[in-house]
Length: 313
Image 1 (cartoon, rainbow, N blue to C red):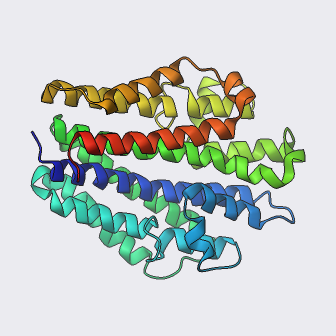
Image 2: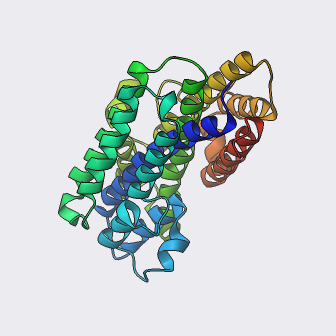
Image 3: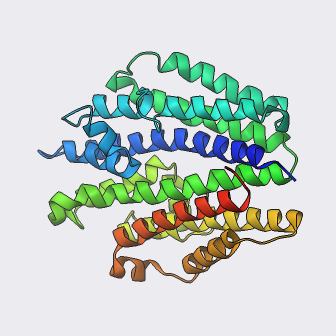
């Protein structure tokens, strides 16, 4: 049985690795939506900050929204604990703390990612160079996952890491979908237009799902199918359904290894059942934003229950 401190380190190490990649994906979503910008261009970047949960911190420092300021805040601002660089540094710190629980390849992948991104993000990234840097961040975090999957024993160490990954990913997928809600707030007349559909397609592209979407839905991009794909599809690796399926499975492994279930097991299974028994039309009829906001709240609550069950503090 792992010490709570070790379990905590593994869980948060992989939450922060996932968060670093997800911040890059949120910036990517903002960039793509900004391509459709009208006179309300700042709304896209305000929505990204809102969905990332860092708008208050940004507003305390800046009084305008644009690609350069927002991307710099989300990529490298030391005062933003959720910036890509802050996340990678925190992940590396956690990796050092649990280094004896990691293979050499897993540790080195984290350390090398930290060194590479520390160099890449030492200076503000020009707006024209943002796509390349965002791709680099996604590539480096994928290397960490590959090293971990390819070399780690499938035991409780692996389970805590995977739970951290999918808790963070579920939170992020909900937030990226919610970007669309905030973008539409000032301009509801756009709903159903070419601009609206392009923005939905941009969300798919920001989670690297535009090609696989066409394999599942042999139709043009539309909001209902895209939301269905990212919320309810059980095979899409960033969907809420897929994330919760993995959270439930890994918590089951821990319950089996430790011989005890906790409140977090019941809660995760309840959320999973809700996703499996839902349909996208009902979600839209009841309010997509309300559904996503509740899911984000439930995911954060589940994280706290996992921490309590396995003595993270």
